[in-house]
Length: 106
Length: 122
Image (cartoon, rainbow over all chains, first blue to last red; front, side):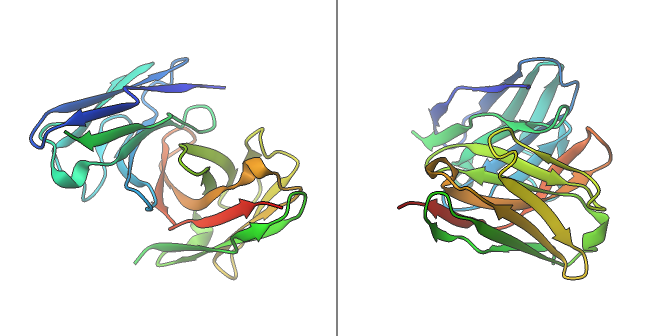
């Protein structure tokens, strides 16, 4: 099984900060990595697919990168509505999620 | 609009069974594969099971293999999850999700339903 490890588990940031979340796979998953955003009490929403493709309607301040085993999700200028939990997910061998990164207001 | 709506959750005793449904609308149901994903209270997302667009193949997480069965009824635009021999560890919000993308590996989950809560308790 492929394990997905996100870091950090949580972070605190100010509105306007640049934030980067890292996701590491236990083996190469090429570019088959997706990112989701989840707000409390709500279903997850797709943000980024195939490592770096922005899903329709997602603001351009979100970007994704990486390949192989190391991936990043970057929010260029954090907005109030971005405070949420973010999950990475691999689709190379079955499907596995990272444990999540909670982004909180500083 | 494209929508998935889960139902069937509730409180069930350990060892009992429950069937969840996921009603789809706004797109051609029979063209898509689907997943169930669950989230235990305060925890992260756990992939549970998958069914192909034609119902011909299903995959399961080890944690539910032999106890859960995914199925679909294209005439009703509905996805199902039959859960049996439920344990306390199965307590979670269960989400259905449509698989989108272009290939065996190049796929992602969008959209998701709103989720239905299953509580296993005596």
